[in-house]
Image (cartoon, rainbow over all chains, first blue to last red; front, top):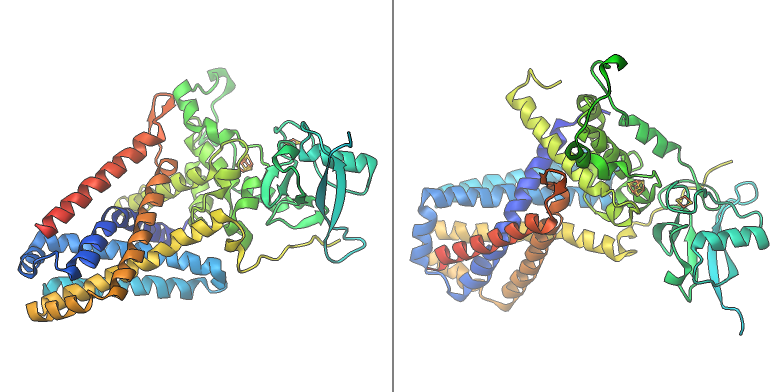
Length: 112
Length: 248
Length: 126
Ligand code: SF4
Ligand code: FES
């Protein structure tokens, strides 16, 4: 047995992302998921808003950390559902997907 | 008035004569003040002397009488029949452990895990007796007292699906005990323990199901101890990045 | 003599309500991830111009999408509540010999949740 710094790292992202998701995701589902398609948000207003550097920074945090939070949970639930025999591939797929999602988020945010 | 009775469905495994365990039904007198252990002792004395199970103190102190009662890990000396009336009450050996005979499980794995976290006060250098005892204030005692209440009953391991699925998981009571010594103001062993506690097989295996703390008869809250150790593990990572020379 | 090892069913998490709730808690992450990805798609349309944005937005006004978002909202709120409620086990604050009561750890988180939610809604909807 040895201290695992990798696991400490992934857990830190999980915990930070979990807190962020807990605080921020519900209101975004209401406002952007449910409200926006119903026309609650003015297109011009939202364009100006997301163009602001602070908004971009905010969006970066909103997407990146929760992605890793989710990846960590999905990794462990896959183990619990019977994939314990292959810990490394499951971890690579989950965190890899979070990384790709984050890179995509960065590219979208930069294009705003 | 006819005497009231209750049915016990008891897990039997006799490795000398059978390959697979079976359930055996027994009817015992129902008494309001009886616990499951009383019913088992009645059976052993009156009906079936071959029934095997562990117990000692009958007062929730020794930690040897843990069993699954209707699917939940309980101290059988604290599980009253009246909680389960009219029954039947299903009594099985603690989940997640190998069964040696009837309600008796193997505890070697648990014992080794306890030992692996060095559950004693570690000092860089022992202070000679002539210099007196290590003093501790009530506030310092309060930081770890809760985690020192553990009676090693293993109910938390029986409640933990991670331990069931991943037997090398160091598990709730052992990590809680490590936490107890890490928090002790007299102890200097945290850096020794962290090779075990911050390993893949220990805190990082835990997904905070939380059932260990629910079933713990002593309110140790092992799940809380594990989460606190995770935070210390994350802090340890940060320190080792910022001050690579300081982290052993 | 061989000790007997009891097999664990792959459906172990259906055997006890608390295990099922645990699995549901973990699966909230699937909905949160999915929502965030759809939200990203929406932002990428916004980056392509107002017409693109409006076309995609109107597609998303359907009942199916509404249903998805309601389910995702339930999942996200379940995540929030479970996350906050277990935090006193992980975060221990002491004052002398006493532990600060759990309500003092959990309460401020709910207050902060309410405030940030209102603030974000106000900024976006204003
Ligand atoms: S932590 Fe609680 S449940 Fe676990 S062995 Fe100790 S007393 Fe028993
Ligand atoms: S017999 Fe000692 S704890 Fe039950």
